[in-house]
Length: 352
Ligand SMILES: Nc1nc2c(ncn2[C@@H]2O[C@H](COP(=O)(O)OP(=O)(O)OP(=O)(O)O)[C@@H](O)[C@H]2O)c(=O)[nH]1
Image (cartoon, rainbow, N blue to C red; front, side, top):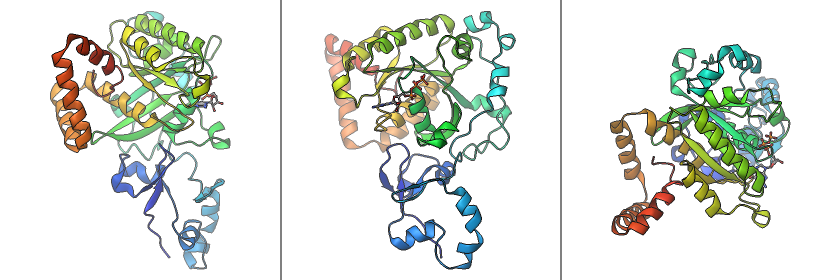
């Protein structure tokens, strides 16, 4: 008995959605990332390897091994198909003090290349150390407890629980952004003083940085500003994308940092800004897609970016088109408004 799922669990939003055609995740990654949701009892049996057919009993052992816990709509997806922790000893060796001098870090030299582990990811068909130019390294920075790991785990498709404990601190995944696939390696390795990773090395190795604070913790917001200053010093000559992220936006009643404060900080420090809630999976997809767009805008030719933007505009809804059009008129007609438009652009992650 075979069953072709028509409803899937969206790992980004946690919502049930129709089949793969409507997703932005690559087809290659699809099978590994999206969780099929059974619609009927017989679907659920098929999905669970139930039933009395030969297929059901032959693959039963392996199926059982793949099942880890269950969700109300069926079994949890297989472990680590969706993300690949890098061997941390290799990573530490590559980042050891001798591997990159402070001077290099200070002048913005790229960190040492990390070899892509063999057979590491089903989502990166062209993976391999030779091609890691095309893998964008994204570092998460921020004070303790602001939700860096929570965001990284959502990116990696790792659920809380034992799976999360075993997941390591680096996550790779291919995502489709503006009709083109992008491979990201997200590093959740930032530790404060006394941590295993040297801050200088972390600051030297990224193709983009995500500085996270918690909107419920003013100190973490101040820490984010400090980190921005440190980054500017470490990567003076580089134009690396930096995205300031106010996480835990769901905790409305304990908010200590307003949306406007976050925005203003991003304008002052010349970086992009977004508020997220890892708990609600809110804006997490937008964050990582924005990271890709910011890298592309700096790395790729104007023509390539214009082509992508044109494609995106074609796909945009009428409402969005109208909003964009009005925004342009407003910005043109008034200086004051133009200034506002500039500060507004800090949270448009699709423009420079
Ligand atoms: N309500 C809420 N809680 C969150 C959110 N993001 C993370 N948390 C919780 O905040 C706590 C800390 O989250 P982590 O992801 O471990 O934070 P971290 O920045 O990685 O912390 P360190 O590993 O200490 O640097 C955990 O209990 C999370 O469940 C969010 O968006 N909303």
